[in-house]
Image 1 (cartoon, rainbow, N blue to C red):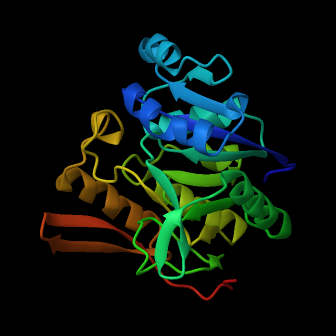
Image 2: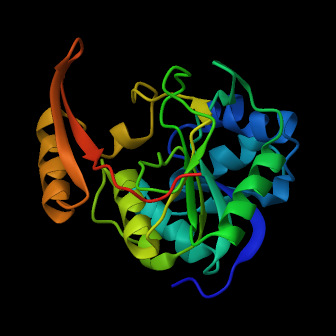
Length: 262
């Protein structure tokens, strides 16, 4: 269990072969729009790309750290880099905007610092130590509420109080963020999600770098991982295998439960 909490928020961005994308999207979003202190931003890269990131970021206060290859392995490295209990916001490197539901429409989030404070208060007032956002930026399905039952928390934007037992788990690659979601829920009996917050980012894997560059994302290999996941967590999830306009897709659907939402 996490013994103590370190509540100054560190922002971490695992990045692979996306220096230009990072410098066009997530980094200016943090530095220019949200005025995040650059010394609180940590970019984790592979060794042979370190100088490229360091030179193009061109801000000595932004931390560029040599980590490892592979998203699950990099998240494990990040967890070991920080102290147990550290308050962390993990972001993808290709985020165009962070959006907030107002009425039935999405608008750019005004203050990331204020949102971090909201999550901090959720952690202080509950057993939750992991908080996610709505996985797609579609206002039709989003709601102005925070849930505390089992929900998928997409890895592209996720807060957590560093729990190395969970964060260093590398059992899954394509379902890495599903795995983290369920591990936090199983251990703490709750996981938080801000269903009124979403991001506009590359969710189709078409940009260079990222998961597609280190893992086979074909239906065959995804199905192997999905079926293993369902076998490991059969009480918590089911398989969602279907045909779409873009072809056959398979993923995990968490089962509904009756934990309180607020």
